[in-house]
Length: 258
Length: 282
Ligand SMILES: [Zn+2]
Image (cartoon, rainbow over all chains, first blue to last red; front, top):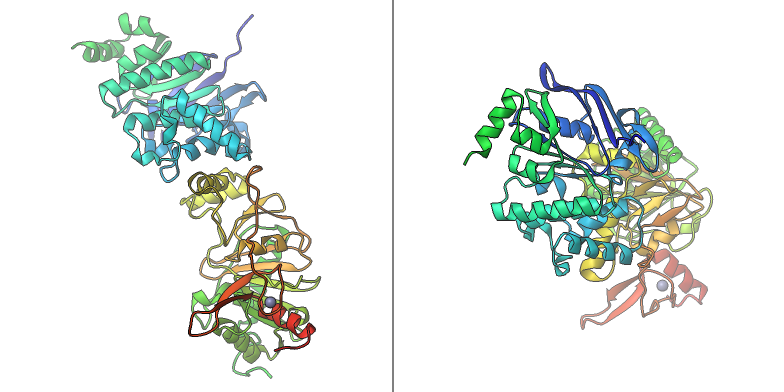
């Protein structure tokens, strides 16, 4: 039996005027798989993530998503209302900056509850209870439920972003440098939590990072990008321990050496 | 007689036609905010120039106009607007809700149920219910277009989480015809149930923000709430000290120099009519 890919990307391209942010991107992502997209800044990895997660419309190519509920969907052929509905129920996005991923002017509980309410939940008690559960799941004290996210540490804000996304039990999560700007010890705790949640909820994840240590810890497979193109793909250990492309070799040697 | 120095109802005919066209669109799409080319009026925005422009576009020689402010016919604002239309149209004005064909209002819906054929014209300061929650206007427009209103409940959630109850007592958001979330203008939430399935046409004008919206007669209007925190209107322990009504919106009035207070209907016409029926004690 051939497993159905969750996401299938064909010849995707993003341009900014004459500038090519990324092009000729082809890959498949399977249920429960974590794909790391690595490369330096300017390699096109963030543009790619945005085009995949409907934050910007690609200039060419196709993105197909297999929904348990709705079957195979061609993302950019879908009416916008359905695309938005999908992104706030079956998908999640964890941004590098909490400013982009949280509503800073409402409480932690409301941040978690927002997606439930967007999806039609109208029982306050139930929203409250699910918010508490998800605070616990991301190791935030439930006494903080009515506090503003601005009173949280950077690590807590990222964990709150994760809770806010996972509350609707999405299948697919996009992450853009989720550990960026955090202290090393805080990073480690966040990565452990992510690893645990990924396996517990059988999440598929596309994570963009310039940090190969993060990629090694979380990703099953890697896609290495340089100047908007994918130059190498493979299992994470294979790519990092035995890089084939000269650019990957450079990337690995410059980062992994003490 | 109207003042010959002005066109009938002050606005020129072309402007009135333009406003009526926007109004027809608003009536056709209940609760949807229609942009319109709002004109300068000879009074400040705070006086309700949106409502005044709607009244000017709707009023005809056969109409009878009533103007209320917080339920009262005799505040400065109500008196000035009434005088403005008497001078520029010469049409009859009244304080009786039952006699009016057009009722321009600021902050209240009359207690006397409105009838088929009447039009209630609201003055609106801020038209968009999403404006404080979603600062990006294009995104807010998209949320209206796609009926994505989860964020409205986020605000209600916050009230309950922090204060144990939904705090909005004025301008309480409503869902119109199961499609658009709408601000009813700063009427007390006490008046919200009157909007539901009302026999009269309700039109809303925001002058500074250049928006018109409407609720046609017999349209469903539902106040937003949670299943376990249902919408409730304000209640008073007192009855009206003047007419004895126990089901109206009451104002607290200071009656003498010693700070003596009493509660009376905010709707002066309703209260006086009841008093007259009880034997004309006033
Ligand atoms: Zn009374």
